[in-house]
Image (cartoon, rainbow, N blue to C red; front, side, top):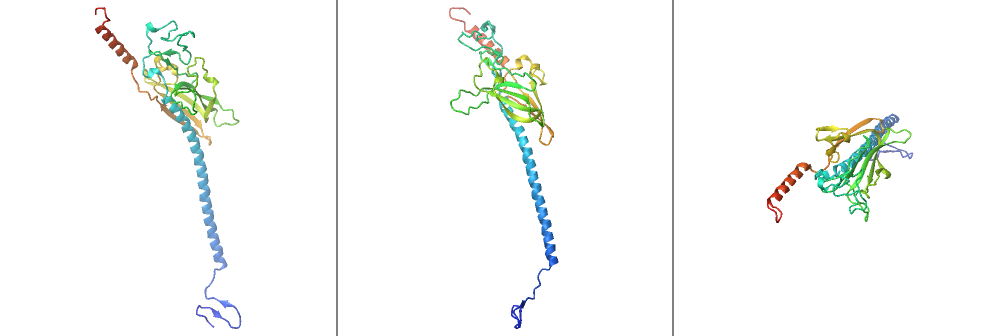
Length: 296
């Protein structure tokens, strides 16, 4: 007996048969093989993506560290401070005392207790102390910056701070490069003539440094010089450009070089010319307006 659905019903037994054929063993094996190849391909793609991500993240982390170190250096140098950026460097002879610093005395009992020191070797014509720019070694640089930020309330700090960049030997067992780029900041008692920057703790900016080179722009020679001592004396506290060349070694052992040029944000004025014109104008004014009781 045949049912409307195509099944044959045997009345003598209980078995049912269908007119549709099922999958054979060969077809099942072929399907499993194809799925296996697809799974292997998907696994390979995912594994490659994970390795690529780890490699990119590692490289980005290293470049981010380099970028952060140079960005910190840019912030400090771009806000490097000196009164010579806007004032005259010459000291009037009639205002000079025995110490040679107009308006300041080396005698601690004097009303003005500022004492010229290694960090403040001179003053400008307004009797403002002029911070020096130190380069004790070719891989170090110390200067005063206005990039200080006060993070804790109540601290006796201003925007001024002394900053020092230098290289220190890497004491690890197997470093990729021999040096570490360090940064030291002093933001308290910055006008103390006895201030010693080396007594303050430094922070690590970048490991794996192989070479660090500073160059300074000489306005007189119109070229870069590799030591601040090669600048004319009147330009050493009036830096207008610093070129930094940094050579570092990444985790893969590749040597990479980056170079940046940093410039203070102070606009450039010809302060000697301005002061000369000012004194000329004052002299002419005094000549035209003589003191009472005196003839012109």
